[in-house]
Amino acid sequence: MASLVEANGAVAGDRTPDEHDNPQEEKAEETVHLGFVEPIEDMEHLQQIAFRSPDYNVWDGGQLGGCPSWLNPQHIPQGPFQCPNQHIMSLLCQIYAPVDEMVESAFHRSLYVFGCAQCASSNDKDNEVKKPFVRVLRSQLSQENPYFPHDPESLSKEELESWTAHLSTEQASDNLHLCQVCGFRAAYQCPLQKQHFCCKAHQKEYFKHIFHPQQQKQKQKQVTSSDDQSFTIIELPSLYPIAEIVVEPEAIDSRDNDGNDEALSKQETMFPQLTQGGDDESDSDEDLEQEDLNQMVQGDAAKKKKADSRADTTTMAFLDQCRSNPDQVLRYCRWKKSNDEAPLWFREPDQLTSYSSPNLPPCCEYCGGPRQFEFQLMPQMLHYLLKNESTHSTAKNDPELERQWKQVLDRMQDMETFIEQTPPEHVPPSLVDAKERATEQYQKAKLGSSTVTNGGAALDFGVVCVYTCTNSCGGDSADGSCINASLGSYREEYAWVQSSS
View 1 (cartoon, rainbow, N blue to C red):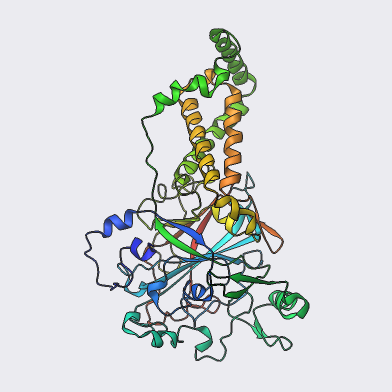
View 2 (view 1 turned 90 degrees about the horizontal axis):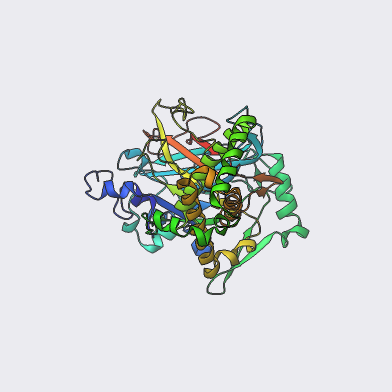
């Protein structure tokens, strides 16, 4: 299994801040790494996800959903963590992405992405594009810190198992308590439940779904491991299901890029409507007359159709890139390309580019340095954030169904090639309609549900692009000490949400 440690130029288990002259570093950094979701098998597996273990050699990838696993276990943000409309946000994912080859104080580094399904923000006021609000937090530590061992491999198994300095419950401050629901810093203790919470909403949620005896068994999910041992994952409405995110280098299927002529030669069998209906010349005349009429009386509609065509081309490119790895939930390519080139956009409108948004992403508010694209969440992630995992597990693991969908995508791409290379007046409208319907069906089938409910609201996005400070500022002290009362030692980064429609 690969990791973002390797993606950023260092190898897990052999990481020192002085490794600058690695001949393979440039090649490794240029590789796009993909994140995939793996279910939690047992308690031992859970303890190796994120920062539950003091051994940083097992921190590859990250975590989907659940409560945050804090890199800095002492200077934790104050809950509730909210969007501008005062709605409580939930963790979508967190990833471990150190940059110690550039910044010594970022030997350990983690990024946390939170989403608010209830909040509809808009980057396009005229078109009223509604999107979930997303916030990103960054935390980092130097190799020498009070929480994790300098070299885990130098410790025995017994020493690692007894290590507790990385746990928030072991911090010296008596005022540090975590909310039992969201994992943020709590504000008070409930006298009845004897548990700490950050707000009344989470206190009530915990009482209803965990504390109340009649609800306790109903809200506990028994997970059976491979050795028939079971453990309990407690599910709460305000949290997304927890799982592991594993990381692998992107592998693209080799496909004949010179097959355009072959695609055109297949048009009679692929598109029988081209050879039906009589004389081609008369059909062309009718098409031309109709096009002239459209240009005269439906200029705006024609412009819209042209824009839709561009959007569809972007969507097709997105689907083509995902064809080899349809289950990817994350794409990681840190600071290697310009912000215009790096993201894989879901559709043409609503992209963040230097032309459309010259002042975005904003410079880092802490050090003034530029922000660049680091990674993006894919719409496939919505598929795994569904509460009912059984709705997609069978289809996802069906090889025959996967083969059929790949054939559908190949056909859609052949149709796209034909439409692009054929004069518009010779392209049957029925063919364009068929391709649009096929694209929509493929998106729904392969990119997950259009919405994910969390706390009664719907989460939906095309992609979420995360831009981070290229200085990776902060963490100057060994313990990554507190920046402010609300965020602790954690710093906020920038996210751009591209809507799905």
